[in-house]
Length: 95
Image (cartoon, rainbow, N blue to C red; front, side):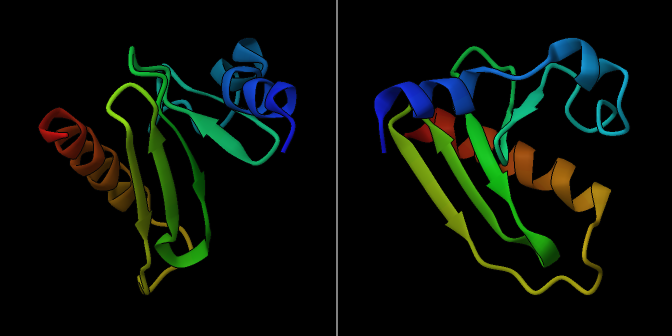
């Protein structure tokens, strides 16, 4: 993948659109671009999120990549998103 595309997909996004959208409650500092969510945290963490709880989470500063395979009962569960984000942040501190 070209590095310019990766940089754009993982740091770009329309912050104003995010703030006015439906997902700001579970990722208040975040944004979204090209199928990637940016956490908005100081580590520059970003992730791809799939149906039924699939995640690919990348924290560049902690040099951490987490692939999470799941089979949660509902396609989207906001409370599980919060728990996963907290788990990934805790693991990044240990890395």
